[in-house]
Amino acid sequence: MKKTKKQIEKETNIQEIVNHYFYGKGLNLEQIKEDAKKKKIIYSRFTRPAKQLLTLAGSVKNAKMAIDKVSLWAKSRGLDYAIETVFKKWLELDRLKPKEVIKKPFYRNNPMVWSETKKKWYVIDSEGNWLEFAAREQDIEWRLDK
Image 1 (cartoon, helix red, strand yellow):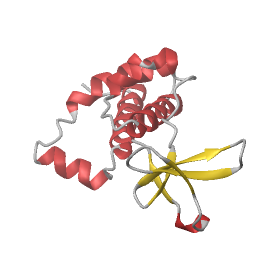
Image 2 (cartoon, rainbow, N blue to C red):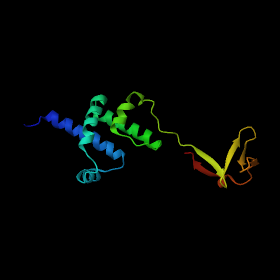
Image 3 (cartoon, one colour):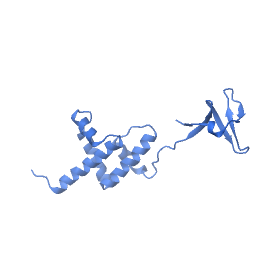
């Protein structure tokens, strides 16, 4: 049975969505093919949800944008995600934002606090005392809040 142009196009769209999902996971096309050969990736497992996503999104472009949005949101929280996660988050996509990266100040491994009223930095020592920061601003170490 010969496939119609529309059937081939739909299969290509689904492959494009599945590959885009894997690109977001840091894989390139060669790695995807190699992992599929080694059975590390069961490629066919991803075609059904990709087809559903294409139907839900209405276009390959919209499906890719949704995958990208979920990818950023999940990665910013240290979460893994699947194509099915896009379905689960579909109604929230316009509100889905990556976790804000917050950096906190430290001086010699002690946390610091900015006093808006006194316009000064304070270092909180191990006993909980607030000591006025007298070093240079360059000496402040900024760490990511996890």
